[in-house]
Image 1: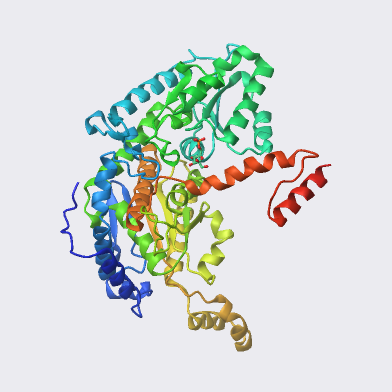
Image 2: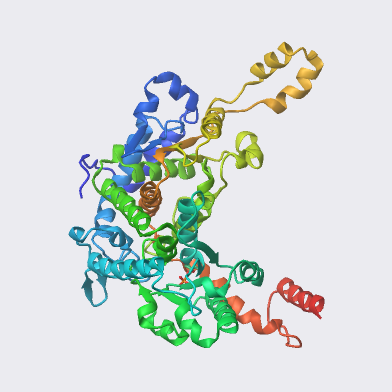
Length: 556
Ligand code: F6P
């Protein structure tokens, strides 16, 4: 697990200092000049894992900056962190847990183990056993052996969960079934907003719906409220006895699952060493397997494992997660660009940015180091995205001409899963054009010449031309792959998971806890009684108190 590149004797402070010097060079942001200076730049600043290529040449990183970034990774002991991560050590220090989601996609021979307070457990083996239970369940549903209470086959699966118990399975199910349809139609209920279930209740027939309650803790307010609502909906229509036939649970909390009334044989578990946002590979992915098929689920896992192996063994210079992480560090910490845009030119990846928002921002949206001291550097950028080409007709104006620079990750499959080549070529032309436009820009002189050539008066040219200037030199990565099949999707997810791990190791933070989501949950619990008609409004700041009073007045 050691990186073949020799460790440079650089301290962490020394590495940051060197990077700051490189970033302060007058030409440090001139990507066009880097292309002019090196005709081989695209080759020298690209790397691949199988069919998946990362081209990061359109970023303001030259050979010196890249070497200094590698030094930073060495000084931060990314290699040591990677070894501890894969050894199942308690890298989630504030919760005393391993982050062993890689075991879920491992082969028995990988033999991953995970550290527990009481010792180690065989993570690969535990994952394989649970996977076998899931496979058997999926086969019985697909064959029609398991049916609803009225004897009808299940045609729909409803996953009730939120955060990591929703975003992963929702994104993957949609990506793998939206074009060809699925073996079952997958639906997702996450929001506690009653409108979400009201919409689904209109579409679904309880007699043909299999319900999965997906919650690592099985205590999450939104999920439990929704699960109770759906249980009542099934019971009202099919009788109380039907609940056992229509429900299954995906959780680590066997006690709470039993208390909810779901039998042991209908509970698919995973362990504490799987974080919510890393859980799509676990039983939380059951909706994926039911919708896209068991083979697709296994291919997803195989893709994830392929990326694990690449992350473990490829040298920094060709290691996709390391490179993606370091490019991100350069952008946010050295260039001062605090946002990140993700544009998948693929309708099937519509939910990919939403998935990444939790993965990146819940993992690395933190300001203290593992030892509790403040981090001296900016950490996770704010991440957003939409599918291309839709994004071009909404916020890309700002990305091209806005007053802040926003790095973009573009994603594109070379071969589509439809038979309209003209549509795919139009899509591809657009993604390449966006990246090229961001890089190239358009000078005032070019705009003037263009307008004059079109016969506009000089007065008109001078008035309009400044509005049509593009600064260019705006950075982007391109992730290009052959096809968006289940395996490639698994690779992409694991790529970003490990990117997050590398950045977390460099910033020195715990990427696997999420204390930042707690305060709001606690306050909501305290506010709920205040909302009852006639209840006194408790102690709040004056704005919150006034808003609660107004809310109640509007409802009375
Ligand atoms: O509120 C954040 C969070 O804890 C996420 O980390 C998690 O993915 C989500 O809630 C759902 O939690 P659970 O799976 O336990 O219901």
